[in-house]
Image 1: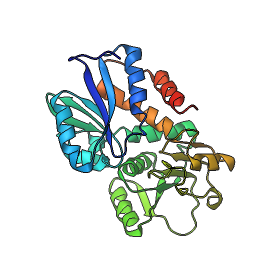
Image 2: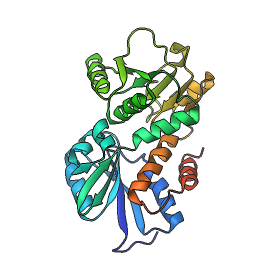
Image 3: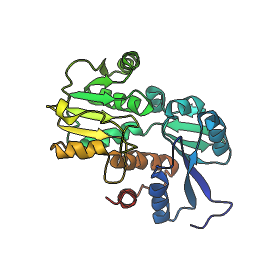
Length: 273
């Protein structure tokens, strides 16, 4: 890819970030459209996040934020969309007149994935996790009027998250007792490593109609493979990456419709799916 002083810089910021397929996906899209831009992954420790965002804003950059910085990024942007403010987490940013603007496209990604799984009408969800991506899931649940039960290793954290989610219009509660969700969503980093424990044992969820793992890995995460082996439809985070990426692309390049199939093919090829 040829670059010059006029090439626009886009980046994904996270820690860790080496696993991210955002550069593969966006660079394929920008090549297909002939855009003079390049997308890179920047390993960004928490203490460096404000200065890295400020530097990108100063040079007209844009990009995405991944774990564990989404909530911190929301506090760093100068302006934010209503959805970004509502979620309290920023996963997409760009510069306008030297100011950093933040958005959250994870909500759109979750809604699109559940629709593709055919469970966007399910009324009872289990949400594993309480971080920035989990916030987007809770807002998506509010949009679909689903009841969401929050599972965390820390019961107090689950309670605080449920309290926050109710303030955003979601019917949210800490997960207690027998778990009988129709939809289960993993919004934790569990699955980045093959040895990670499963977010939810398929044998414990007799009514589970489908599941969404927001983590992706080659061949699918161990949880997705276990779910499919049990006959439960499940997607890993690759489709989420594509769907939120399509929404983000519209922010980065408002005059150019995102080449969705190019983006999806790039992600699947990278994972050898």
